[in-house]
Every structure is written in structure tokens, then in C-alpha cells.
Length: 299
Image: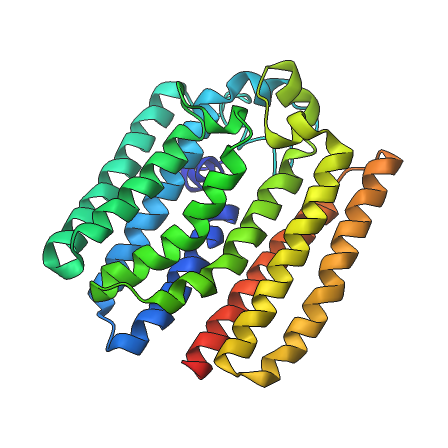
């Protein structure tokens, strides 16, 4: 494994679109208030991706024991495994996390002081705190049953509204409505990816929402999240009157049901959940694209 592959794995680049999509959604919303500066957009993207990467690195540092016990780790769950497999030292990972957080904070300060205002700093602080304390004591939100809710807010409303604030210096009320499908879908992604980690999380005292509810009840909650996410997407499409996108909405609805049903059937059969986890990540991406198109053509 070369250096590029190592850090791509450690940063978990496969999850970075979870940050990229809300930023792009916030950008097309900001476009309604006037031209968007490419320089400021580059700062937003750089800062957000650095914070996200830093949070992933910190998660590996504080989940070493859980990841070591995990026998079902895949590309989408169980951490990056770079520490467990001896591919990187904790010291190097810690330095990389500090570098990511430092670069992200520098970008936030430049955006705030050059026209974004105090709102940018508040959203940056919320993103930094949510990602950091998801893994780090004394809060360690991942073990309280609140981590999924907090990260849903960070990767949904906070990122969308924060991007709008950074690019325009203002608050757009319509951005809040548009951000809720993103929130619900990313919360669903987090929830289903915790299900394969159930045993390792339980044995190490990491009481995630799945550990607290159990796998069966977690799938019931997943059904509610998916239903709410798809319905919110439909409301946004109707709100912006981009009716051709209803075709995408009508396709997404049965796909969400198929992912849920397939995942639940795999769980009962003792099969690995990777196809269902991957399917839900795809649903999240499709949802993001539909929202961006709705705002772009209906704004």
C-alpha cells in the first residue's frame, strides 16, 4: 500500500461525499442571493472536507479496541482498520488529525472575517464539536445514543446553512426545509452501518443507538427515517415546482423500501449487510442530486 492509498483509507474518502453534497446544495441555494465566489466556495469545500477527515481520523484513535474486535469490518463499517492492521501509528494519525482541524479552522476564520460573519464561526464550531466529540470523551456521543442525531444535524442543516452563510453572509429560511431530507438520509446511513458493528460495540461498552435498541428495533427506526426522508424530498420538489423530478422521487420510494426489506431479510438470515449499507449510501447520493436539481431549476 503506497502513501496515497494509506491516507485515502485512513481518511475514509468513500464517505467524503456526505460532506460534499450538502455543500453543493448550500451553494445552489446561495446562488439565489447573487453570484457565488469560487474562491470562497473553495475555502468552504476545503474546510469542510478537512473537518470531516479529521473526525474520521479521531474516530480511529478512540475506537481501536472496538475495531480490533470487529470481525465484520467492510468499506462502510468497522473503521478504516489502519491502526488495527499496523498500517499507521497512532502518533502519525494524531498529527494528521491536528493538521486537518487546523486547516479547517483557518478556512472558517478567513470566511468569517472576509464577509461571512459570526454565523460562519458558529456553524464551524458546531461541525468541529460534533465530529470531534462523537468519538472523544468525556462526551463520546457515539456511546450515548445521541451520536446519530448530532451527526445527522451536522451533515444536514448545519452544513447547508453554514455553506449559505459562508457564501452570502446571510440566512436563507428556505435552506432549512431543503436540508431535512439530507439529515434524515445520513442518519439512516449511520444507523444501518452500526448494525454490523453491534457485537464489537456491545462488548466494548460503546452503547450506540443500535446497541441500545437492538437490531430488530433499529430496523423499525430505519423504516421511519427512510419514510420521513423520502416524504421530505417530495415536499421539497413540490415546493420548488420542478415536477419532472417527481419521476425520480417515485423511483426512489420503492428503492428505499427494497433496501430496507433486503437488509432486514439479510439480518434474519445471518447474512452480511454490506449490500443494504451500500444501497442506502446510494440512496443518500441520489437524494442529494435530486435536491440540487430541484433548487437549481426551481429557485
